[in-house]
Image (tube, rainbow, N blue to C red):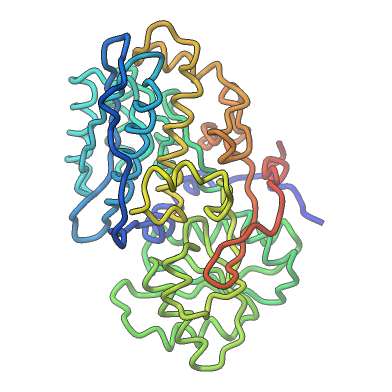
Length: 400
């Protein structure tokens, strides 16, 4: 039986920074095509501009597939007549994985009069959100790493962010794990993620997990796999390549570890690169798995993309949310979109996620903009990711 988490560490809201963003980096696709613009469509209103912010061609994080997803989404919307007859013009801004460049993207959004920043991926929400807030521009599908994204009235994340860390911790205990390792990069913010995971484990009546600190320069994961193998279960929060290398090393050494992955760390690249070592691995997600037919429209829009990446999914879903909330707007501006978002409930991005209510904030100070409190557990099976639970509301875990 879970106990309610009575207190939430104030610093925990940035826990995702050290783990999920590394795990979610998208890469170039393996070829394929993206939908073409239908030049025969007639629009009845003036064009409206949107922006998607994502790092491309940087030394650390590269998410070109997110840009492709935004392009595919806007073309698909326009081929269906746009937003209430307005053609959607996409501005993709490369934040360079740099706060100063990211702030420049936000200033460009304000200067060009975009009606919303939609989806994307950034670790620089602290630099972006205040500028958007001053300009009154909503951030639909915010990455939800920074304190600002998790508290600002212009921020509308579609992911659970920090609370999902506690949920995956609780899951290990509920699955009967007698001992658990928590494998994260050896960086200061990882300590907050460990706290979150251990809170979840404790809420389900378990003992704290063992924190395995991985140097960021690690290339040989044999020792890490051996250390993780000393526990029955291991929660992994590393980049794709490192997770695959760790799991493969563990398999080669005969380790019999059950793997769990933080939100975003279980995708098809990890499964394929681990050569079967991630079979049965479990994670918690906010979106329906990419193998579900509900993603057929996205796949039809672009076959270049691995739609199992959570922030690729988030970007496509954010564009569906934008269409959903603007359906009845006579005038499409940043002010009217922001107002419509603030009044919207039952938003499910066309069935891609459990319905969310943007009128009700999360009952934890500092995490108040967590709207999507419903997660489901998924598992690696063969080369696919399958659902192994219904969507579950994590709010009761926090006393809500």
